[in-house]
Length: 315
Image (cartoon, rainbow, N blue to C red; front, side, top):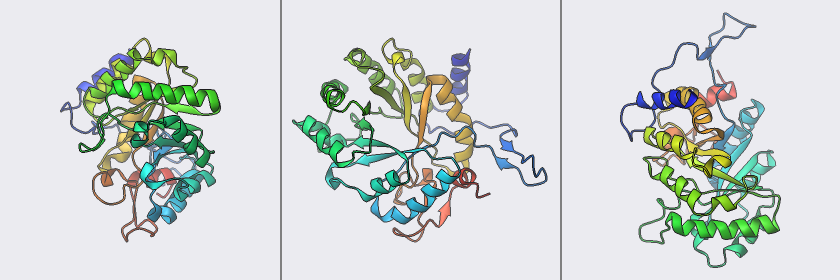
């Protein structure tokens, strides 16, 4: 029954590859303060998952310091997903800041590291540079976002690299958990990749040491993943949604209200990471940002999305 309701919810969304948009929510998705019933009702954000993607951009240091503290104080932020970018080297001070705030870090091992012939040594260097990161994601949309002029990687090529990393890390760093690369969040290619990984050796890895990651941005991706997580191998593993969100700020709250429960019930997602806290105000993902630095980098936020305000208790 739960899966049937999930699938029906997808059928109600027009367009197979349009971005996920809320389909209309009942008035019950607001909260009245029982201690002050005459106060204006507040948006219900109880379905929120306390995890965010954060771009480890140096110019946002002051903004991240302030806004992360606000969400932590409100009990709405426990962990963040950050990139360990090969071109930047190690010891990123934004990553260090987030660790100092007591947040659990999910570190993304840059796709370009995966082509290194001595990937075991690169993993040693990453772990030595960030000893406090205990969860590492091995790549991000590895088969779809690498530059056309650069190296490419199929899921068949990815799996042997994942296996080498898995063998090395589980042997030498038993306190670290790995997360798979997350397939593309649009269309059905992601769910096909998940099932293919199940055929290419995931059954030889431990569900206690490895988590399956997915990105979800469209109804077709939701539909495909609903079937993929029932694959005989995949269903043994935990599932994290490592990217999702809406590019329309006025729909952020209703997106969380409507889709987060579907992600949990439809493909048993333990965690859901909103993408992204701040996109750099350079276009692209800006609409999904929870904050904006309207006066440029190195400034405190000049704008907060309705979702951020609701999470931080600003209204």
